[in-house]
Amino acid sequence: MTKPTFLDRIKAGDILISDGATGTNLQARGLPVGQPSDVWVLENPQEVIRLHRDFIAAGSNLILTNTFGGSRTNLSKRGLTDKIALMNQRAVELAKTAAEGTQTLIAGSMGPLAEMLQPFGTLPEGEAQAAYAEQAQTLTEAGVDLLVIETQFDLTEAMAAVRGARSVSSLPLVVSFSYDRGKRTMMGVKPAQVAEQFAEMQVNALGINCGKSLEDNFNALKELRAATNLPIWFKPNAGMPHSAADGSTYFDFTPEQMAEHAADWIAAGAQIVGGCCGTSPEHLAAVARAVRDSQGA
Image 1 (spheres, one colour):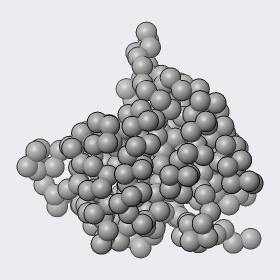
Image 2: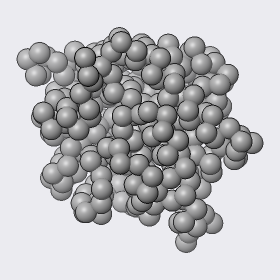
Image 3: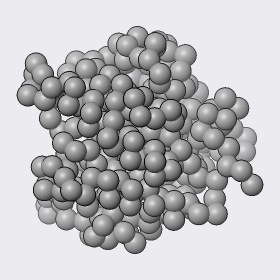
């Protein structure tokens, strides 16, 4: 049976369930604290596949590739410039392996470049655009169903990312910002500004992910919904982060507590929901059940 496309499902009004966290879950499974999760696509691929499968079993019908830090600017800092294509291709292969036999959509994840753009930093806008284009092209050619530019905080970088992605790919494109200052990003960007900026760009959905508390993210969701007609992607953290004695980070919402809010996310206008940091497969399963219950499914 042919898998419905992302846009088919969005146009049909389906509520899509994305996955949960990658980094914090892989840390719980042995990834050393401070090591980027992307390296496990080569060093521990079976654990990456297992996490994808756990989210699918929990109810996800859309999963993100483990490529959040897979751009040239990120990988060059780790001495992995020669493995950019390999790591992105391999991550897509792992997601496809996990999703085999299902209707799960695979989204190519592209996170921030880990360098500030000029004039606040040293990275030229053209180089940023080229870095996103390179990663987007690799992910597209490897066979993802859509691209997700996520955890953005700077309008200039996000616009460069969209231009870069659109220069090499016609896949559906989601742009998601992290409002970690309440209803503002670390650069002071508000949801309404994002809606205005991307209204005329070739973007298929706008989103909110990571950020701060569930309440703050929910308030950002309501502001974004009031300012745009585009579908909304919503992946908040599982509550607030706290530091454990071993240096790891944990989040304070239980699966049940997170699920209590899921119906409100849908009612407020989110069409793709999941979780970011701290969201385990157990959290995701509870959210998926709550969403199904709210839809009478």
